[in-house]
Length: 464
Image (cartoon, rainbow, N blue to C red):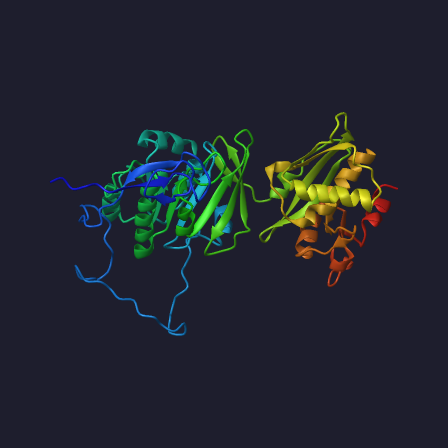
């Protein structure tokens, strides 16, 4: 008698499991996302090529974990793998941690495969196995020839079956493993199609088990949905150690590598690259590219300082304030929170006396950055006042302060780093909060520091 096959329905958006088909997912609320998949037969014996745990564990015996006092647990500081890519080292927290699993997501064509191939070619001291399920070996070779890197330790494998991949891993014993991409892999233990929720979870579990038992770092490239989230179940992001987002506009040259999860470092660091015909170039001084070059004085432009992790950046804020010709004034912002923009407009109208209720407001942060640091508030206000008054600001002035609802200029963190970065880029004046001046000495800097406490002091200095 034929054995009955067990199946279940999985939401392809969030991974929710259900015994029957449902039109709307009760977990994420999406419609028509349930797909029937065959469940794994737990009694099935592992096939040839399945990854087996390392160690001296006898066949058929189980190891028993015992609780230990935290004082009894010993560990040794892991030596990170330092790559030649300083931006990747910064984002990962100082280099590649042995045994870590890193998931990299991004839009199609943004440069994820180019970035990982570039990293694989620069790791000359480690043997790298680059597994591709999307491109042939000839295509990867053609792309590698455009990159100004050469390595004798980079091996290419075009395979999608995890059992076959682990066979090659046991033979070659790589120091670093790259998977491009996790959605193309499939395990023989499951009969579901590649890219399904169950296949993505099973393949990821096998790779995590391999990484932890052999202390080998694994990089996985992941697809994203139309909403910009990583495709597959949300549990995928919980399973891995680090989640990186490769962002940018395909029509622009600059790319941003941002950390959204990192068990071995900070999640506030970012790396900036420039896409060129010969690959991705590291941008060591992002402030120079985030501040546009302009010939004459233009109104509505101000420069503010922000912190991305431990890195200070100077970004340019562009505003356009024009009388509204429609019934309802427009409020559009690019790279800045629209709700915070409305709050600053209310402060300018109430505390500053500027009538902006009947004006269209357009705000843009240059370079494609999305700024969340409140220290940009003062630059945003100065930019909108400059456009409203049609009065160009001095190109050697920058701003670093938060603006409160009462029009007060509030203190921010790491003011010394911001002042030093502005001084290094040649700015002559910087406006900060007077509450930030404790421990800051004017004689230690060549830039003029203006300490103000209210928004009116800024407008009196710049626009009178």
